[in-house]
Length: 209
Image (spheres, rainbow, N blue to C red):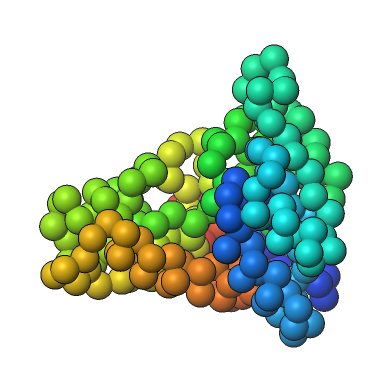
C-alpha cells in the first residue's frame, strides 16, 4: 500500500509530450492560479520541433528532449529519460500525449506517480485507437480514463473516468474531439485534487481523500 498525503504548497509537475501539447496547455493554464496547488517545473519530449515544447518555452518552463534514436537501445533511453525527469524532483509526472512506452527504470522511480490519460473507458479498448474501436464495437458510451501507469498497456490503477455519449452520426474524428474536451477537463480537475489532497493506492484502487 502506498499513501501520499503531505504536499508542498505548489507540487512539482513534469509533463511529457510528443505532439501539440493541448493537455499541457490546459495544465499550464490551471497552474497559473496559485490555488490550484501545482506548477509545471519541466516539459520533456521524445522528439524535437513539436508544438508542445513551444508552449512550454512560451510559458517560461524548462524543456528537455530525449530521443530514442540517440541511444543504443530502449533500456538505455529509459535510463536517460529517468535521469532527466529525476533532475526536476517531480511530485507527479504526467504523460500528456507522450507516445513512448517507458521501461523498468522509469517505473521503478516514478510508477506510483506517473499519470497517463487514455481516450476510452478502460479496460475497454486499450491501445492507440480507442474511439475507432469503440465505434466499431457499437458502444453507446465512450470516454476517457486517467490512470497510474504500470508495466502493462493501459492497465494501471484508475484515478478517474468520464463518459462521453456516442452519437448516431459520430465519426472517429468527431468522437475523438469530444472525448479530448472531456479528457482535458478531467485531467486538470484530477491533478489538482491529487496534489491538494494526496492519494492512496491499494492494489488497483486509487483513493483521493
